[in-house]
Length: 155
Image (cartoon, rainbow, N blue to C red; front, top):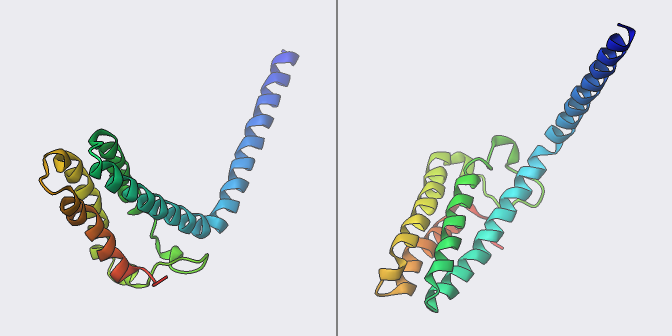
């Protein structure tokens, strides 16, 4: 019986330690959440830009299978970006985002959703496109331009 009680006490102690550690870690992360959010969205936008250049190159050289994979990856990144513009991430940490995002949130979210959808559409039609460059311009680069012209600080 003594061994059972000792075992239970030990497990309760470990459980309490883990719960307190999680709570402290959560509290520390919540103080850094705006910075983490801004860094994550900057990373995703940068990644999408680099990926878009690869998509352009691969598609122009006829390597459609690899280009399609990257298009789907970009689509998923745009979906992720929808959650990376909370109220507490409007400024600081070298964000390039303009206040227009939060002032015009529905249209910004619609543009992110359209960008995601257009990448899926591009993946489905790129091989049969008669003018690859024009199709990519219409379904990929035009969304980048629309976002940058309204929602991003000049750089």
